[in-house]
Length: 147
Image 1 (cartoon, rainbow, N blue to C red):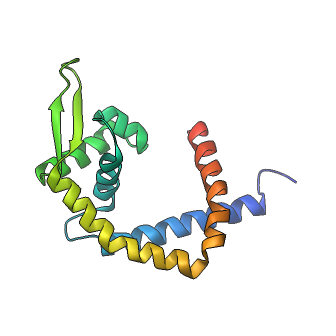
Image 2: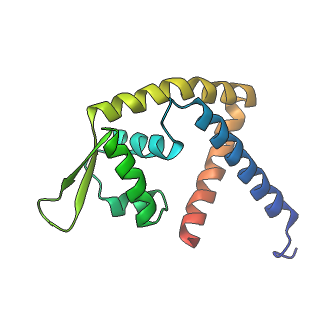
């Protein structure tokens, strides 16, 4: 089978892109007023992080340009959701940590989106979701290697 127009690959990516767009639209409408999906993603990541992250690390994690992550971080800092501090070991770098207000904002967002996600999983079926997760992880890893 030719890899140029493989119908299976086209169908897979069509479904992934459409599901991604629908999920982003749904969650964006559900998030608390003023919070963007990118804000929630960074807050959720920082809430689970065990140590501070640099803006460059966050840019790599979210596959964003330095300018894009800087813009998001400035908005989060302005809202009081994160602290951006100097790195005392390397004055050229900054360290980003979630603030108590940021943790509360993340928790509030999670409180409104978790039931939606849980309902989707229930409607699709827990076993189907469990079965597809390893495939999605493999795709994510392979895409990361290509990017």
